[in-house]
Image 1: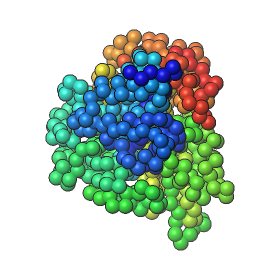
Image 2 (image 1 turned 90 degrees about the vertical axis):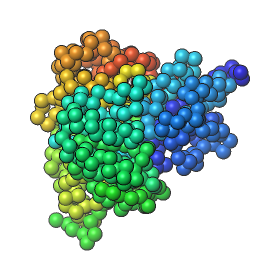
Image 3 (image 1 turned 60 degrees about the vertical axis):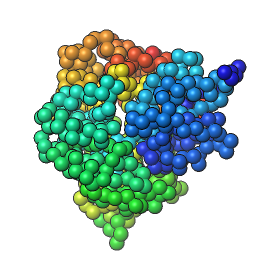
Length: 264
Length: 264
């Protein structure tokens, strides 16, 4: 294995929810400095504009459970580049501290003596709220918000009754393949069937689509053509979701959602 | 009241957790275009660099419960500027969809016919995780993360037993004035006293400070000099918090935490 005297540093960079202008200034700067990008599938190509002309861009994506590269291989790839003295941006969709196993990648590299730093990105659940025009923590509807994945390591799913009892707005990731199960579990846990709900697919991207309804009608989002990757939001505050989404009449931005479809 | 033929638009702009380079590219662009900024106290002056030379910058801050301007007055101020035809950035610390009553401001303005758009920002809970070098949703420790405020409209506090049962990492805002109460409530709800915990004050700012310990020792954070505004994090994954925080050996950035103090 190629090994430099001084190993390179690895940045776990959050690329945000999709729209290239939702990157942070820090992320853009780090991306413009490193030798190598290791990129998730869900990261759009628009952000390549920030790469150094001589940077090496490698896709190591995982998408919807179909792994094009195993997690262990991604870890080893990042380590190999760093040991060879190259600076690396591990470019992840959303935020490295929320889902996506950023913490595991950090721990692996740190255990091998590599300097690792997180650069936060916006998570798609926040972008979904932005598009719907709602606050996730409106004080009339609870004390906070829970970001949770419906897809778990042991495939057992989260403790829905406890999450319902917590009274927070629920923002559910990776749940489109089990939408009926989520509806049933939440109703069994005591959520009224008329609890407002929304689904936002490709939040912030040009192909964003929204659906708004209630827990009872949740699977209608599938009939409306929404599919993974999408965010499911459940809670009283979703009654205030707006249509069309504000981006439809937004200030002209390079990545405005001009052809997006609002189903709400 | 001054009233233009065409009202101005209002952007609810998330200024992020503090470090000026954690602003998004979109936020920086919007801030550079509007006529008026209405700014929260917790927003640092570094971001003023993005203002148009002729923009009017007004502080309308609320901090730690001490209101320098009532919420109703802030709403009316934003409305008056918009009706007078001026474009407005309502600049809020963190993210407008998470706490800070962004949803209420949006609803008020929209009800008066004003076009409103949210521009997401990073929330300080995510910045705290970045500084501690942990993922908030590590799959070995739960199914997600809950962002919750300890300070509620009716001052009753959240349903801590339910939140504990949910099994998510807890990220608690506005809790420094009731740290002992939070510790007691979580322990009564069944959280083991040795559950790892951390407190991050001024996450991402040059004066950031960290404390790491357990639920049992949570109030030691006060003895260590940490105070509001700070984020309290509770959950198994905090056992992996790093010290010194990675920013201490970061790539030189304009706002690196050069003089921060790591207590972990």
